[in-house]
Length: 266
Image (cartoon, rainbow, N blue to C red):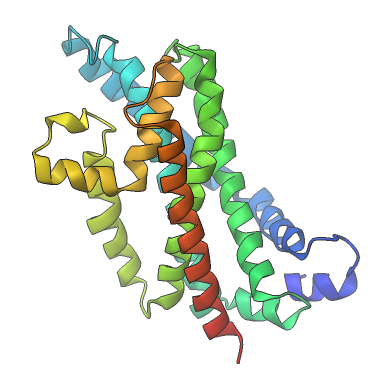
């Protein structure tokens, strides 16, 4: 049963319509979660083993006075959250408009555009938080979390997930071909992951690239996650980081709602 007929059959199931949309995605995820375990969980763990223990063994002095594995893990936490959020905000959103047209079925039910958008964003947050919670558990077993403040990475990655998912929703809803989604990963996600302080300090970059790194939401999340897991102060103020990520999330959500309304409301 799709979400449209489900909403008609059980209109009082939830007092918040967005939760009905979230329930729809959770039902689907219950059938497919095994397929995403490798990409969203095992691959980052293998990266920890390869880079943290493998490459890290050749970095005698560590980075900033800490072992390379401990320094690397918070960067991987943030970059994993970014990739999970983007993965659920590109092809699934494009498909809901262009291929399976789920959004059109939802808009035919007693659901507003804001409900459809909010419900799907809540599902993205669910995916980000469950993935990072498992990632924290495994890296904690490796002894790579040096502070109990590591749990603070969960709200940080939730805000990062919104900061990247909301504008990506708008982008995915606007493009006419999925080739544009591949270009987003090739020319946006990969360079951002490589040069936003995940694998090496941003300070080692030339001045121009360093400023570009500071402009990305990923760097702000990396700095906050690194401060939390290492138990140190971030390079920028916590409030400044959070406000910057919140601005991306709010601006992206407003843009996505405008694009969704333009497409779904005839």
